[in-house]
Amino acid sequence: MAVIDAVPGLSATIEIEGDGLRTREYDDSSGAPVGYPCPAVVKYIRALPGARFTFHFSKTPPVFQQEGHHIAYILTIDGQSLTTVHEVGKGDLPTYHSPWESYTGYYCTGSADTGYRQHDFKFAKRELSDANSMSQEEQDRQFVTAKDQGVLKIDFFSMKPIQEEHVLDYQAGILKPKKHTEEALKGKEVDCVATATTKHYTSRSTPKIPIDDFHHYHQQPFAVFEFRYRSRDALVKEGIIPPPSIDDMVNDMTVPELREMAREHSRMKQAKSEPVSKRTKLVYIKREPIDDDEKGSILSGFSKRKRRLPRALRFDKTLGHAVFRAASDEELEADDDPLSEQPSLLDRGVQPQGE
Image (cartoon, rainbow, N blue to C red; front, side):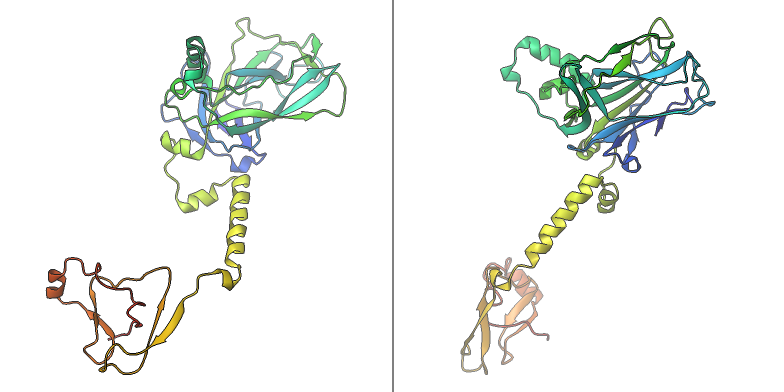
């Protein structure tokens, strides 16, 4: 899990497909994060299109020195902020000494009239838009929003006691991935996008959420965790990780990748078990010796694939039977390309023999 040295006792990570053990975090080679009014950390993670992901956060007192009544965090996905998640205490008592571990892998939308829906976070393949089909105003707007693409962010705040709550009444589909042109992304290897699947609630209960009441009037976070998600290829292109070896690729595979590899192995195994009649056969034909000096008969055959003699070998019948011998230096010098005129082994009707 990612930590911030200036805020001990606070940690966060992104779990992909609910398997935190396979989550890999990579440091930002550009150095300390800039642009935040508080301590922050930036980590790169590997995304897999189609995989669900979950925000995982942990608070460990007394190492963590808390201000205010409790803490809360706001999730931001590709520049779109979602509902604030508050720490729940016992009545009006502050949560100074209470540990807190939170998992958030979805958000809710809807109303009491239409029902409430759950939207699970997941990664998807990014689609680019065509600049020729956009107005100049739309293109300019994309250059502003492109800097937030490929970023999952957790902002932590100190909060006052919860005084009021209001009924959840949101329009469905808050998290809508935005298409950007390649020019707007400015060469960033952002080939994935964060989106959400939709699940209908079976209950028509009326969820209530607390009204945010920040401890500090400036409403600024006291810590920020930023996770930049990329595919494996994108991480390599940006120089975050080295090109993987075969062993690394297997050991570092996520659960969906391992399943796909198992399916591919099953397909290959099934292809190898096809009947022999479907495969290419090598047919041999018995024919007479090439001249009177040769004795016996020689088998010849044909196949779709021709085999040529290596450059350093010569076909020789002078010993009374067909053999292969090493070419002399004079022969190699005289014939710059001995392979061009040599027939295939099977066309000559012989089988290789040792000297």
